[in-house]
Length: 309
Image 1 (cartoon, rainbow, N blue to C red):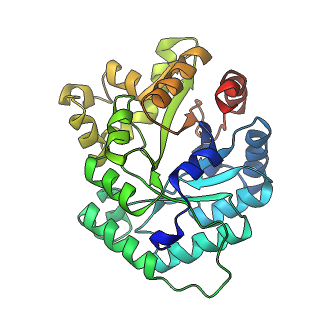
Image 2: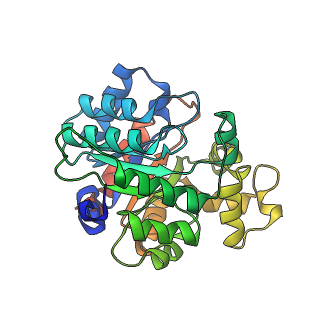
């Protein structure tokens, strides 16, 4: 995991292309059903499927292995693997094992998580930058007796603020901001510089009724507005307490979640790309948390095909 073994931000941008899929719903499905859903995303032309790691849900490496085994081409990316869920050696060796078994098809996104989640595990949430830097040092030093993966494992950091973005540029292949409005993207690119990979998550609700679409969006967003890391990032961007209160103002919800028809969502994706993102992973939200929204992903795939080339 040393700096000499980096995958490379520009190489990763070329591998993943401009648009991927990001899915919470896969966590809720059986292994068989989520494998089938990911094959559908692959058939639709999405080059990457991003998956989370959360308390009480599927462990991210075993989850990634299920999806990789069920598919043939799609890249599986962790968004993100929690550094408090495993020690640095386990993170490094687990990622290497997947990357060796599935060359070029696994991306390791890691992050410091959030104080409430870490406390629920019985852990201590330390200073994020110092904690992540020490963790990366330990990953670099981790021994590995099995065959080294070729190409090496791409690593990106969950990064919102300026210091974590700078650490991502210094030590990894790039950054994966989550729950951000478009205005964050050029700021992130400025902090990263031109070479690191920038993969921005964009939540979307495909809806013809703005009121109903915003209801689905708000149900998704309200948890994030209570987490200090996301709330502080929005405040840095100029959003006030009145926007963060009561499950979020309409203006804020509309800024962090793309609600509307296919054209509206495509415009949001293009705005991130124009702002400096290399890759936008679209998280389509449906009313049911276990609905992988494949119909919506299919509608979007046709409209996004020109971006994918």
